Each structure stands twice: as structure tokens, then as C-alpha cells.
Length: 241
Ligand SMILES: NC(=O)c1ccc[n+]([C@@H]2O[C@H](COP(=O)([O-])OP(=O)(O)OC[C@H]3O[C@@H](n4cnc5c(N)ncnc54)[C@H](OP(=O)(O)O)[C@@H]3O)[C@@H](O)[C@H]2O)c1
Image (cartoon, rainbow, N blue to C red):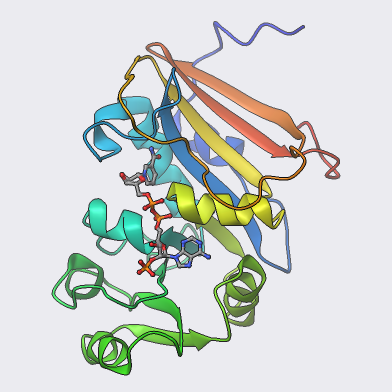
């Protein structure tokens, strides 16, 4: 058993090191969530009520390390997504948001399309009404029509675009699909020091479930009662940094 708190203080450069992606030449999926101690993924339908200063800081660092922010349409709608602000470290541009939607029923006036420095990628299929796809393309979106929205198809498309450092910001349905297809390489989970009760869901829902996937703890930070945990798929080359 190791003691994980108290820890030496961690400044921003150390955070960047702490969360560095492994060297990869294919999509590596890091998932980031915040949850209450009793497992709620939202308060009044939004994650904001769970956030802490530390979680917000890490959220920003994770975006700066990513080449693409992958998000389900439910989260993009609920949370009023817009484009990322700060450039990916080592580049001049922020990572694009890639939104997964079967319906392509997204508001072309939303910040995802009107408040972004780089075109938002819409990952959809030919099953989405053409009118929806066309209006998003007209709003400046980069609409990718895939054969299906399975994790394999989504990651193949991101890999084709050389967007390998993937940061998935949820939501629970997309995360559930990724877990179900064994496509989660890493989970960054902030446990917020709150009890929420209510009927909010978990961080991963849906899919068939199947056998639980073992994960290895590779990082644990603490600030003002929040635990910022980093787990990697067990059995990877470097289970521990
Ligand atoms: N605590 C946190 O860290 C955190 C993070 C993210 C989200 N949340 C919360 O989670 C809630 C939203 O959850 P959600 O589960 O509805 O959102 P979600 O997973 O972001 O979005 C689900 C939607 O994604 C689209 N989709 C397409 N293909 C999919 C696939 N293969 N798997 C899954 N989804 C696919 C569908 O959109 P179409 O309907 O357009 O086809 C589906 O309705 C919000 O309350 C949000 O605040 C919390």
C-alpha cells in the first residue's frame, strides 16, 4: 500500500509531464470525467456543479496535450460546447472538437460552429438526414460521413487524420460504447468531494457490459478534497510511470 496524500505541490509544467501521452502512431484514447463521491456524473443535468478548481486546471492541461477532443452529441448540446481555446502544446492551433452524432441534429448557430478557431469535425453516417449534414457543412463544420459510429470506425477516421492523441470528454453513452469495445486506453477521473444522490447516471452507460476491464493506477493528485486519478489499461507497457 502506498500513501498518495499529502503529496508535494504540483505546478503547471509538472502537470503537463504528469499527463503526457505515450508516444503512439495510432489513436490512444484518454477519457476525462468528473464524478461525485457517490457516482453522479452531473448535477441538474450539467457537470459544472461537480467541478473544482483543480479539475478545471487539469481539464485545460488535458486539452493542451490533445490533438482532438472527442465528445458525444448529448454532451455537446447539454454543455453548450464551443471550440477549444488554447493551442495544443507545440502547435499554433487548438485541438478540433470532434462530435459524434447519429442524427447530425446540431444547431448550426451553436458555439461549436460559430465560436471556434478550427472547424469542428462532425462524425456521422449517411443515416443522418442530408439537410442536417448540409447545414452543418454550410456553418463551416468538417462533416465526415462514416459507415457506422462504432468506436473502431470513429478511431479509424481520427487515425486517418493523424489525430492520435485523443481526449474523450464524454459523455456517458459514448464512453459506454468505448468501454464496450475495449477502446479506452486511459481514464482520468476526478472524484469531487461531494455527495449528490438524485438520479444522475454513471460515467459509462449502455453497451453489453461484458467482463470488467482491469485498469492500473498511474497517477493520483489531490487538491482541496478532490482526488484526480489517472488509470491506464492494465497490461500496457508502462503500468506505472
Ligand atoms: N461529469 C462529467 O465529466 C461529464 C462529462 C460529459 C458529459 N456529462 C454529462 O452527461 C450528460 C450527457 O450524457 P449522454 O450520455 O446523453 O451524452 P453523450 O454520450 O455525450 O452523447 C450521446 C449521443 O451521442 C451520439 N452518438 C452517436 N453514436 C454514438 C455511439 N456510438 N455511442 C454513443 N453515443 C453516440 C448520439 O447523438 P445523436 O442523438 O445526435 O444521434 C447520442 O444521443 C450531460 O448531462 C452531461 O452534462 C458529464
